[in-house]
Image 1 (spheres, rainbow, N blue to C red):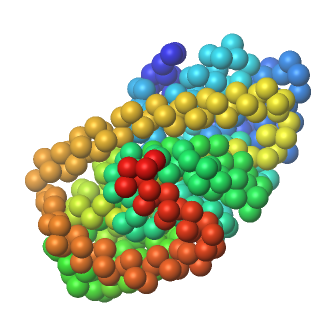
Image 2 (cartoon, helix red, strand yellow):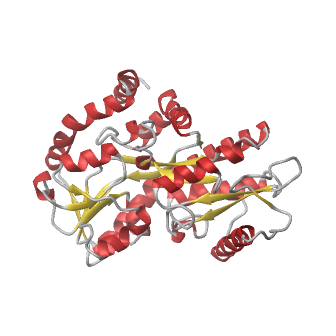
Image 3 (cartoon, helix red, strand yellow):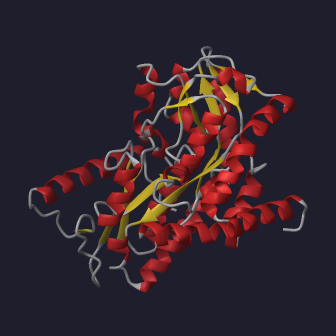
Length: 367
């Protein structure tokens, strides 16, 4: 697999930014056809340059990737170019450079402002209930169980529903991992969270979950989270360890509490503008490479998470709290009663029952 060094990556980003400025001014970017904003360029024989929007920081895309998400995204960038002899290339724009809010992601994909957006499952809730089953607190016990659901007909139907509801084309589930809480006050019970201002994913289920735990939920774009914590707009946040470390938010928090409340995937979706210009063969190739990229990231998620947790533990300013089984159960009991029925209402009873049945069968060893 061809590797992209940090220097090459930053050069690609700079070149892509310059190309965008030329396009805006009516200039030409040379032989490669830009596929963004009104599309144009997937005709036979022309090169295709896919612009990928991500809110994750640049550090995740260094080397071969420093997180499971970074590994997956760079695998796609490298492989799609290698398998088409450079006819199809892809460029990552990190740090929310070309999209930050959910509205910018979904709207940008719908109108072709960029070609692929990598958007967290918890950020789709205002546009589709497709990923409600991923936002259920304390449903998934481990990675293998979550992967089994995502790879099943249940999980694949979520991608189809998201396409029907948004017209974007979700292609895979990139890994991020189980989510943990960071905060400035010591937390062992839900009562310890009463009145805490927290930033959570912009999803009705996530909002309701943390409100049920007593928090005051405050909306903040992920790309603005560090500043929001720094300025005291919020007191706490929740994310997988990879995000906690790559965004450096742990530097501003006294505690990381191992709540393991949600498994999180992020969904790479492609714009219908460019998708409808692609040949059937190119569409299938992009689907295939995206799924391969998904699986490549999965190989590293658990090990990387352990390393990120250790990094936080090594930081003198942040204490990691491992909740006891009884303490975890108190959190589970607090949210499952009010939140799981809310998920059923969003998903519909048939889809909800299919998910719960699959998980129960899996845990019973029938899957």
